Structures are given as C-alpha cells and as structure tokens.
Length: 267
Image 1 (cartoon, rainbow, N blue to C red):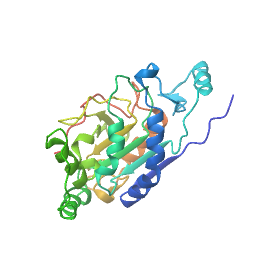
Image 2: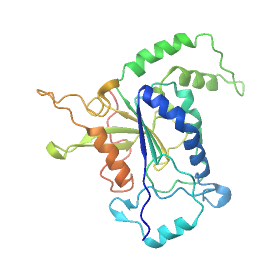
Image 3: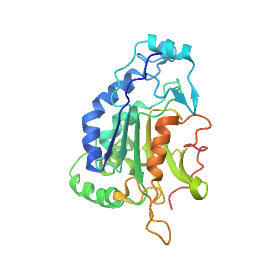
C-alpha cells in the first residue's frame, strides 16, 4: 500500500499570523476555489483535494474510496492546515476567503478545515486597542455604496477597523470546556453569529473561532489557558484541541466537537 504523504501545518500568532497569511493566502485561496463543489459539475469540485485524514474519527477510509480519490485530479496542497491565533491584521484581508464560503447549493464533504482562525475573547490588543488604532488610521477613507444602500459600506468599514475574530459576521465556531479532572478538554460548537451572511456549512473549510479565557488567555496566552485557581498551572487546551481536530476531523462523534450553539457565549 502506498505510504501516506508528509503533511504540513503552519501556525502563526499575532504578527506571525500576518506573515503566514500574507505568504500563504494566494495558494490557499487557489486551492479552496478549485476544490469547492460546483452545481454545474454535479456538486463535484473542479479538482479534488486529497483526503485530509486517512482516519476519520478512528475509522479507516475504505480502500476503494481512497483508490478512487487518487485516480482523480488533485489540487496542489500546501499547507494542509493554516492556523492563525490572535492574528494581527485587519479583517478586510480575509474577505475573499469569507466570500468563497458563500453557499452555492452544494454541501462540502466531511473533512477537517483548511484555515482555522482562533481569537481569545479577552484579547484586548486585537479588540479595543486595534479598533481604536484602525479607527484613527482609516478616518479619511471612503467606502463606496452599492445598490444605493449604506449596508455594504458599513460592512467594509467594520472589516477595515476590526481584526478577523472581532468581525462578527465572520464567526463560525466557539470553543468551550467539557468534562472534569483529567478528562477536561476543549470542544468546538458551530455557532452562527446573530446576523450571519448565510447559513453555515458544518464542513466548510474556513473556520473563525472564538475562545474564552479558560482556553486562550489574552493576546499572548497563545496555546495556554488562564491559570487554574490557587495555582500557576496552565493547561494547553487549545493545543490539544487543534491536534485532535487535525488527527480526527470534525465529523459525527468526534471528541473535539459538540452540538450547534452548545458553547456559552462570551460574557
């Protein structure tokens, strides 16, 4: 049996997220455009993305399915997953990826996401401080109206003055903790924003995730949660969740997922 290829995950934090996104977003956008299921092709993509995990929730993909996928044209893939934690750049740079997720009548197949953006609820640097700075820097910028409405202008202004995780219409998931003691771990819930641009697809390859301080503590908390009461111990809940997502995928029964809207909103 053919050996599986080497897989690559790129992680960027803060300005490292800006560098990673700037360098890789053209390739990622190209791949996601080519691999989006299209109605004109019977909800098949133009080219196939190689299966991201050979073990979906611990069950090996059938050999005939793998062989069939390998015979198809496959898209160039690098990296296998791009993870941005508290990325330090305005959300307008992310708009093209967000717009590509607009539904076209075809569902995405079960697979892990290609792009995961994680933002801490208490990331003041990318929240209030970033917004204040961008508000001043973009004070003289104009936003064109479309269809005689101010809605598109206000959406563009919102994206231009906020970081990705603080642009509400981009949000797709929320993290929370479940279990007790050594079994305590993070899970993600599909969590549509109050006014979504469209109905979310659970297997869309672009995720924008918010996390409470118990999982990601502030801008520099990165992979560590806020210290446990009475100790200085910090648990790597986010790292464990990302590893689980990468290895097991988000399918039914996945230990890294929970039901829609199951995670409580930020306080």
